[in-house]
Structures are given as structure tokens and as C-alpha cells.
Image (cartoon, rainbow, N blue to C red; front, side, top):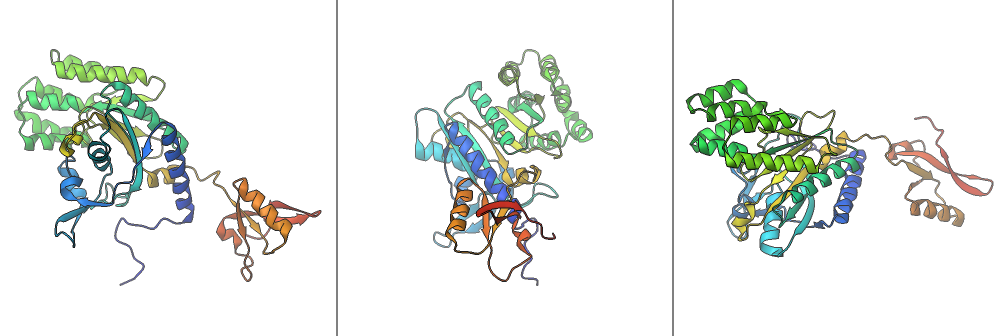
Length: 386
């Protein structure tokens, strides 16, 4: 057995990528703080009864479980931080008004979400509690767009959806839980042949509405089609109205609609959204409203927020413009020490030589070196062979 092998879909993060991730983490958390979002740090492990509350069957399957040696109870390694933050808001902070919270930490998935996905995402996100209006959804989506811009991965499309549409159709059609779950899966895959087969026994007009749902995406015409197919349904009309108002509040962002995007369906309660960018096949950020999750912790509160994986963002962000180092000779000379201190005070990376390593300093990311010219130390491009 090779001792350096890691489990499948688990990998080390090497210096260049780690530097980008850490720079993004600091920048995004600082930006969240400027908007009033306070940092919380939930634990990596919790009892599964708390960790999986309100998160649905899919999260149960994604969660690693183990037995606590102290209590004998089953514990889980978190696969998502959002339910933990909901617990903190409902049970620990117990604030009467609006609470804005943010977080950043590793999560662990029993199975990767895709062929190239890691099982250890570094999840960062922001959540707003205590306001049920569209204003809260608009705020967190704007914050998401701002965060992606800061990370150098601007959103080219932000899809809005609403789980209330599918839930209303499921209720009107009298769907059993098993069939509802199967429909949810094929909706996500946009598998139209499978969808046609599953809705074969459902009465009209629900059957036609379910068949049309995966094609209800794009501009405002997607919402109009949903309304046309479901005239007289007050719940669907309210959901579509919410989406209209939200899109109007976000008119300066690249907003579109996707009524079949039901990710997080089991715990989302209203508007859902997903952000996309160029050069990436799937969503780079997900979010939505989850007003019901806090009830399991003794205090239901309106809630909306988003999360994303910093490791994905770091790989998408251009490496150009990353700070490079300045190589300084090994010397205790006072003028050199002063020059090094001044450069570091300006935010420059300065790496000091150690004896016996000539010719290897480019490995440390240095592209310049300090040289003494006319009695002054100054940075010049390294001329040595790469």
C-alpha cells in the first residue's frame, strides 16, 4: 500500500491554489462583514438528529456517520453548514429582529456530487433570518453577485425558481410521496422521456403542467406559460408574482427563470436560485428560502441565503495577477532589513535567501530580487534561467 495515496475524490491543496483560496476567503468574509453579516463557526461534528433535521433524505445519504465514543450516540460529519447556522439562529442567538450570519468551513460528502467533484468542499455562505419579504431574497442575491465578482468569477446567469409551483402541482395531483420523489429526480435531470412515463397516470390539467415545467425557463415568457397552464391556482399565481417582483428588484443583474430547478427541494420553502458562469458546466452557487428549518430547533424564522465552494471558485478564477515574491539576499545589514520591512508593509511578499540553495528560488514564486544600486536596495526582475 502506498502511504501517500489519499481516498478517492479527496486531495491536498498545494501552495498556489491554497493562496488563491485563502485570499478569496478573507476578501469574501470581509465583504460580508461590510454588509452586516456576522461570522459563526459551527462544529464539524454533531449528533445526526440535529445535523439532519429538516434537510431531507438526500442529505442523509451524503453524510458520513460514526459512533461517539463518549455517549455511544450516532454522530455525523456535516455535509452542509446551512442547517447548522439555522440551529444557531433559532436556538442560541434567539434574536427578535433580523439576523445576518456568514460562515466558511470544510464539509464532507459520502459521495462526490460529480465525476470531477471533491468530497471535501470548502463551503462559504451568508444567511439572512427574520424577514419574510422579497427584500431579503434580493439582498442575498445581490451579495452573492458581489461575492462572485470579488472572486473574479462573475455570474453570467442567475436562474430564479420557486418550489411552490411544483408543490402546488403535486398537491393538486394527489401524488404519493414515492412518485413525487421520482418526479423531482427526473425534473432535475430534465429527462423528458422519463417524465412522460411517470405522469402517464396523472389527471389533466396537472399532467400537462408537469410535462411543461422543464421547458419553463428563460425570460418572463417562462412565467407567463406557467400562469397560462394553471389559471385559477392561487398558490402558483403567488409564487409567480414573487418571482416577477424579485426579478424587477434585480433588473441590473443577469436574471433568468428555471421553474424545474428544484435543488434543495426538501428543505426550501419558496424562491430558489442558482448562479452560473462561463467555463463551468454546473452551478457555482446555490441558494434560496428555507423558512421551515428553524422550527425543528424550537423557533421557526423566515430565512434565505446562499452557499458556494471556494475550491471551485479558486480553480475558475484567473491565476493572472496573483502576487509574486521578491527575493532578498541573506544579510543582517540594517539598510536591507529596513527595505524588506518597508516592502512587506506595502503588502509585498519578500522571501529571504538561505545559504546553499542557489538557483532554486523561482520555486518559491519569486520573479524579482532585491539588488543594491547606488547605495539603495531596489527590486529588479530575476535574470537567472527558469
